[in-house]
Image (cartoon, rainbow, N blue to C red):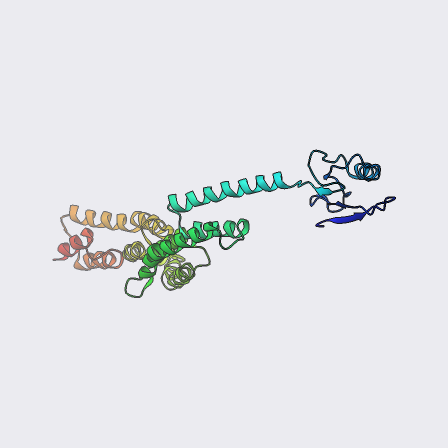
Length: 293
């Protein structure tokens, strides 16, 4: 579609009028933007009239040799607008790359835009983007890589979850550190969190002592805000009401009787119930032992 040569045999002449088909109208009529200066030649005037009938008015202002017909650039203005748009886009991208503290994730996404709109590898936007990525990788990704090393790697579900959040904030989802963190977190949950969920599946079997131990483990492994910790605390509150409070009432009744007519066997039964239900440092357990003594 670069152009169409149209030969017009005219009496006494062998003129060739070149008609350029506009790029925006690849199938449209030829000769929509031509220049002709030889209007006095009847044959040429006829050719011009023919072309004008086919494609519209011609540019008669240009100074050209006799019988010359030249294409008048139609797309100069459009190309200029496109160039201005790309210049503005380039400047905006450069300001973002150099002025903002973009993450590797953001720079990678920006690279897709640059590759699409600036296909010339020599364009300065490519060098600026590569330099910013190299610097950010060296600083931030290097820090994350150090945290993933065996000596400094997280050792619990909470640690791997925090590390994954840091990686996802800085790096693309396809980065190997993100994939490593996801894999480690998944494995740690399987080996440590899922067994806790299994224990909670049968809450009636959990004494107050076991629930307190489970709470301590869950906080250390999962963090105080994990749902399992909240579930355990709810069970502890219910267990205190259903089991510890009755033990306190039994002990209080015995003490009020000043232990008259209370057998050692009765006190031993109270102590055994306290030992099964309560933690070793529970005050009620110590009081029950003192009563026996």
